Each structure stands twice: as structure tokens, then as C-alpha cells.
Length: 453
Picture 1 (spheres, rainbow, N blue to C red):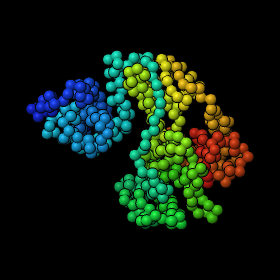
Picture 2 (spheres, one colour; picture 1 turned 120 degrees about the vertical axis):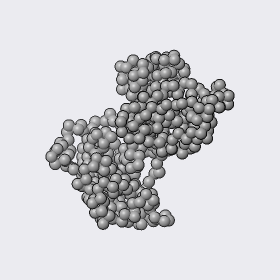
Picture 3 (cartoon, rainbow, N blue to C red; picture 1 turned 30 degrees about the horizontal axis):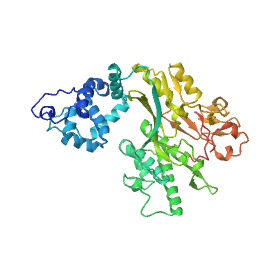
Picture 4 (cartoon, rainbow, N blue to C red; picture 1 turned 90 degrees about the horizontal axis):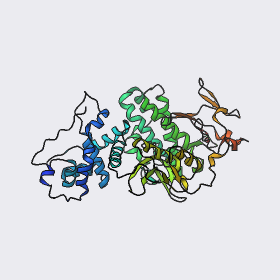
């Protein structure tokens, strides 16, 4: 429940005691004078229940603290400490010297609440709108755009750890909500392998290749047991986690000639493969031919003259820089910004980007992209695949039928897998896929090596 913050002045307030300590040109004084008045609790009231629960910590206070946290590059715990002992922070937030405003966990809860309610850009847009009203940004001012990579805050797991983490994510909610299913699973697998401490470990020492192979077989059998024993569980959250586990198994594993489970070669894995169940949106990307990263790309637009950032659009790390270029620019129309020109590098020089921006009143100034996109090659359209809704199967134009699939809830699509044993020998494979590794890149299908599940 949201209760508006009512601040009653006292002789312990930082602005009374520290007024002479904070320089006139200090960032924290400017923050207090310019940014703080823009953020009010009422702007965030839709994020909270109106008449139930304990009174929430002031969302305006948490919003301001979040900005200062990123400005000083502090962790949540460090920000909690700064709010207690840093006079500049207390002054900027309007806190009393003896006030401890919130626990560090409140910052994480607030960020989660922003995302869940689609208000992650609420603060950014409000400050940007103020800059426009003050005339600091011209509405048709020339902008430039470029992308930067963002490293995901996750450890890169081995194949065994990836499967174990996915199983662990299913078992966590299962234990409290569906005890019968949890107990059935516990009778089949060693639950000590799936504690918070053990999911990140493959055992003491560096395991040899044979030991790794045996361990992989063990955790895959455990995954089979978990999927089998939870078939009747209709919980949406658990279903999503199960689909994630299926996807990991399908994208990374296959059977060898003896029918044993083994990990696919890197070149056989799809480019859009899931790399972590903790951060399912993170992807493998490249900064150059030799430098790789796991995380995201962010398209950033800024004004050329005034040097203000006008928009940031984040996408998975495996996307091309120009993928969200148009979105980054036209989203600003809601604030009245229509740049006359947008400057970018070759990644933004495609004809389609130029055409779409022109339709919205902006001209793209970028080197002409002369390299033909691999997506321009002819592929079989989805209309040539036959979908059986009752049997939940998909048949390709050559008559190969598959029922192996997983649900991508983010894109709201179902992706089907075709066995490499059929597709690898197909005479029309070049017409079916435009990917070097053989992955069938359409909304409805995704051709991979032989599926296990």
C-alpha cells in the first residue's frame, strides 16, 4: 500500500545543518534543486495496492536513490550505507542526519516493481521532458546513435551446471506449492545435488573428460525425471521454467551413435541459444571477430550539440546494432523529439532503416551498407509448413514431421525442432535455412540436431 511521504522539517535535517558544507556547483545540490522536484510518489501509485498491505517506502525516494546509486556506481548494500553515513547523499535525498531510510533489499524490490509495471523509463522520460521544456534540447536537434555492449551479471556455467541450475529453478517453487510432485522427484534423484550451494559445482578438483560425460548423463536423467513428474502441474511459472529446461536440453545436447547423451559441438548450437536460466534474456555476442561477451547490446541516442542522451533501447547481445535503431529514434516522438538527422556508422546504413526513419521525419546519415544480409536469401516461408493443432506436430515441405518443441514466452511463439538425421541429408536444405550452422531461423520452426525430448 502506498502512503505519500510527508516530511516534517527538524533541526537534524541535512539541508539545515549542512547547507554551508555543500558547494553551490555541487552535483548533489543541483540534484536536490532540479531532479528531486520532478519525482513525486503520486507518479508511481499504479505500482502499489491502494488499500492493502503495509505502507510502502516512498517510491520517489527510492527512485532518487537509484539515480544516485548508479551515479556513484554503488551496490545495493553500499547505497544503504551511503544513505546512512554520506552527508552529500543525505542532503540530496532530503534525509535527516539520524535517518536510516530503507534496507538495501528495497532497491532491488523497487527495480523489479518498475519492470513489472512497465515503468522502467518513467524517471528517464520525466527528466528528459524537463530538459526539453527548459529549452536545453531542441526538438529537431541532430542526434547520433551507436550501440554498446552490456555484460550480464551472471557466471558462465558449464553444460552440467546449466542443466542443474535449470532443475534447481523448477524445484524451488515446486517444494512449497506441489509437495506430492516434489516428493516423487525426491524418490528418483539425489536432492543434495540441487541445493543452492551444489548447483554451481561439479565436484572437487578438475574432472576428466570421462567423468564429465558420466555427470552429464546423470543430470540429464534427473531432468527427465523432473519433467516427467511435473506433467500434471499447471502452474504458469513452473511451466515456463520447464520450457526453459527443455530448450536448454534441445539446444545443447544430442545422442551419439551408441544412443548416449553428449554435448553438441559449438558450431552445431543455435546462435540464439539460452545461456543462463538466471538471466534468460542474455545472449552470446561479439564486440569484434575475436572478442566475445555474454549479455546485451544497448542502442544509445544522444543530441550532437547539447550532448544529452535521448533514448536507450536494450536488446539481446546477439542482435545486430541496427536492429532497434528505428525504435530508438521513433520512441522519442512521444516527448516531441523528431531529429532532422540521425548520424550512425555502417551498421545503421541499411536501406530499410533509412526508409523507415524517413517515414517518421528523420534522415539517416550513415555509410551505405553494401554487404548483402544473409537474411535476404530465399527460405521456405512458414506457409509451406503444415501445423496439426490437435496432434501438436509440424510437417516440413519434404514431409518430415516433428513434435519436439518449446515455448518462447517472451516472443509468445512455439519453436519446433527437426532432427539433423533427416535435415542434414535433405537435398533442398539450402532453400530451407539461411544459417551456416543449419539452424532454421523462422518464427515457427528452428531446425536443430536430433532432439532428446
